[in-house]
Image (cartoon, one colour):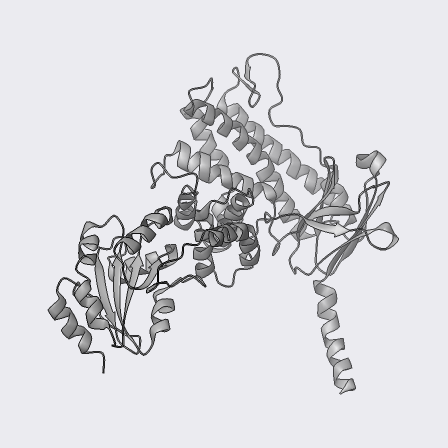
Length: 493
């Protein structure tokens, strides 16, 4: 047995060595017991609460990760002193720095030392320094420069920085580092252009002094086309996410007015339904999987407890059950989920909320709970007058199902902002049975299964037999009690 264990250890050891990434920080005259670290996730930048790394042996800080993908690591010493490094699997690198002479004392050692020295030597000037002449104090735009001039500025700056990268390379840099840096360079300068134009556009929409015109809109679009957001396999750079945010919020929903939900409730975050829609319409693959999780996590971390973000996380979990971003996305929205639990409404006896203990994302999640029972499914909404009329005809149905293997399941397709109205309607009508306010994932399935893929006529009734099979896709309503009771009796035995 001992021999087998030793043999297994020898097999596992090379993989461990290849996967582990270690980075050691030696900070002279650093008077705190920890540094804050933001690690890459599956090689991508991902917004998260920074991790505290405590001072260890020899007063050094040891950063470890087992991500098998290379990516940028950010180390924050406080007081605006920050370092970015590029990590690659199976490597140990180190940094030494004197806090009294921070910028000039940075010294990297290890296989990626040349890369990290280059990364931290880059001098990036603001895109639009305030010069002489008339300009907007918001962004440094001078009236004697045209939108095309600013667009060409960023093209020139991107090209110039990439040339420096190639010149410094001389085969010292890995291919993946060069690819990551080229992405970082592009989105850094595009991001500064986005910031400038978005500020002017916001001022324009608020009837403030602004230089924004349709020409700015034209070059705004061209800037997004420099490196299209929807075709990114790895989002190495944090500036990618910033540009994506400008694209969805200011450009698509603002300038292009690509809006489906007019007058969204900002308190609960209804505007993020648009982000979800736009990403699904235009993105695919890793760009879609990453973009949804990253941008919604970023918003959740702002701490406003917008409940739509929690619902969109549940939808994401159903759409991408194996996503490497799922755990971090969940951590970002946890506070919202806890806040919702604290406010949980308690129904009177005989009225049971199906998702009180766990999230329900599909019809199977519902029907599988009632195997051995006939299920009469009522799909409704609080704003549906015919639905409310049928509730007033329910007494014969309630008396009929007493003592029989039949359960009444009511699924509302109301938006989450009508949750209190949903609860009140159930209580006011004393709707005995099982109840659920459908999330986005379940709502989509109901529309696809019982509607035309875009719409679902309400109310809608269906019957499932004891085996969980759909036996009547369009069943009779409670007001047609005689026919309905005969149909239900067919499936009891």
